[in-house]
Length: 342
Ligand code: TXA
Ligand code: MG
Image (cartoon, rainbow, N blue to C red; front, top):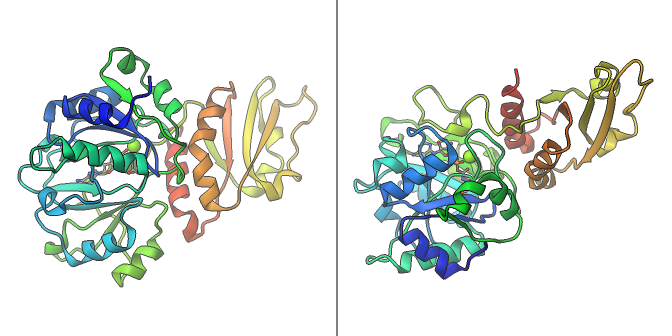
């Protein structure tokens, strides 16, 4: 099932889909300049047509081929954070197909740091007459579901497409960061609107502020659409709920008789959580200890949600995260996951 770089690049050039590893999550890639290839992404994901996709570029790509302007803010951020988990939304060059930008006048661009992603992007670019190849890729999951952080997640998400030969999977290690890139909108600078943080990620608001010289704003109503910003997103199939620390300790007494729930609790409180009372009075609670370091938590979260999803729990409870700036991205993802069930 797994294929090699050259073969993967060739399939992209032929208009087929290739899933590939990045440092954030696995992407579901297609030739960004081939609208019918991009249409296959939307079809496989079940994603609405007006949601734009990120164009992934090789480290030596000519950015001015893809965007109509590279403002000084973009240059600074690129210098600090590329290649890496940062997507920039910039005014798009006129030849970029509507299909990529969901009809908007901007385009999202990102240069991943993952060596397999870079090798694929470089090999694909070499197949283009002008040497410029961009791979449009959303996370390789069905719309609204948890993003994949391993090749096996992708395989389990798209069995039909792989079977039909429309999708090949370029395998790599598990994604090191584990949550999607930070997205910064720089497409409205001309309107006097500075950098906007559309999606928090591994690169934090504070790190962006340090490079920009000011803190990026949060999105207003006119900000470009980000499908991950829909209230309910990133959700497992099992209902997920956030639980405050003090409620975790006696959570078991709220579980209906006959039900089995799981609680993801920080290591520090695990010994204080009651996991069983009389089975006549309540159901049972299994406890899963999670890291209190946000980087380690992010690396593990999506894979863990997928595993818990397969274990037949009636509910996944997640101990509420610190309201600390370093936890902004994880609060964002888990609150959206929980919102799918209210
Ligand atoms: O880490 C990541 O960003 C991963 C890997 C594969 O690179 N990709 C990813 O793609 O998370 P996706 O499609 O699942 O999320 C990208 C988000 C979407 O919510 C999309 O709406 C937004 O980026 N986006 C892409 N282009 C945009 C544009 N021109 N304007 C506004 N939002 C855009
Ligand atoms: Mg996604």
